[in-house]
Length: 355
Image 1 (cartoon, rainbow, N blue to C red):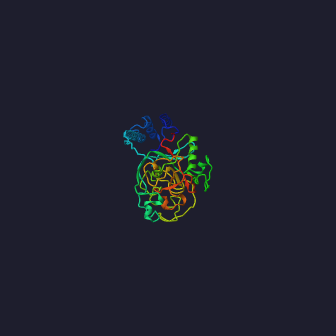
Image 2: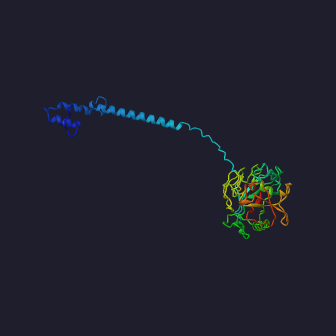
Image 3: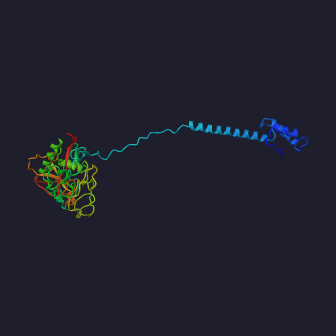
């Protein structure tokens, strides 16, 4: 139906239109419009306005359904119980060895060595390492390294992580080392008596009880608390990338180079206790008196300062040693006044360093 053209579509407007135009062509259409406008807006039966009412109802229903759906799922999301959280305790592995003790006065680091009992001496049939002479196995360099010589026990103690360096020595003593390339090089060319003088000054300055290790303490630590290992590296073979020694000769795991001098302490990997250069670099004085065979007392004690007895040194001949002299069981001996460019020392402390 064509709508009557009015500016304002109202009942009053259509009534005025009919009053002015009794024989107009659109009188019937105006009457129909008046009927529609008199009904409630968008009510059922309102003619052409009925679709608006139906559409509005549909929209309201859709909105209601939507809110119901959203509310239902929102509620479900809230009430769904979370998966139970299970606390898993992950064990933290203990360190391979306790952290070193750093002396506040010297800055030196010491490794705690837990005591125990072990068989001192050569526990290998090291004919190949003893210049291919089986008789040397019975009395290598007169030192009697017979197999399983003596079961020896040591208590807890601290042992220097490194050999005493020239920088540490120079704080209290005149440095007369032959290889003065760096303060981190090991001090060498020092006698047993000079080492004792240094220790005396150090103890006076710190109130500590520094000393050299006994022969038994030295071997026990070099062999990683008495294990059956050939070298102070914790291994049964040795190469130029593991220690400073003369690797140009057999027997060793392979033929290598020869530095022909000392090197900075800690240039190679430590053994499993965290100790460096227990084989090679320099041989090391111990505080023990030498005896041609183990007797259970000399190797576990320190000789008196005034004694002229021969002293034990360990660690082979240092930088110019062949593999035979690098073994942890190898014993050296010197007079307490002897000095060599391959002979130094490291320090020990009681298990309670402050004492």
